[in-house]
Length: 178
Image (cartoon, rainbow, N blue to C red; front, side, top):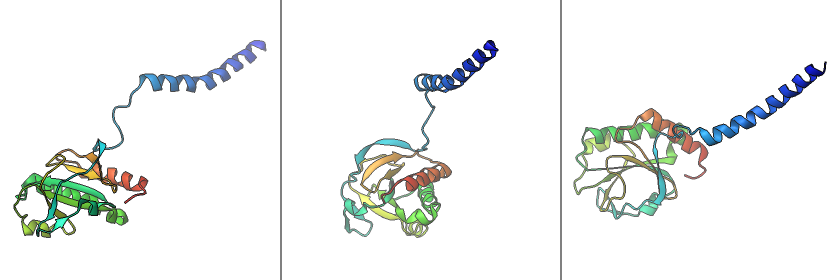
């Protein structure tokens, strides 16, 4: 009878101690492969696009863009296929947010003095097109700027829309700003 009691006590102790040992081993020896986000997280830094002018020539204050989440894409006005794909992706990601889509604004920073094609602009209603005199960021890649004006995330040159949609759903779900 005493052997059964001892065995039961050891079994109870093992059940209680095993999670502690497993947690310790996982904490010190197992590193997860990657984070939950698709985009590359950036060190928080103020978004400073330089002097901004809309495509009609009127000056735009970058501070006026605060208060919403921005998807910023920088490229030349003669939008090639990669540029068109990025603009399409930004439109799809914003539209996929449903009732939260008003919290997201799309901005195309044109990096040269040329004017964008009016037919292209007609395909993207609501897209803010601005000329940037000095560009800070990666041209040809979509970046996310938070409502406080901080660059926070960058996507690959040809991002996967479904993964971007998941990122934005998570951002908008947990963010109280914008």
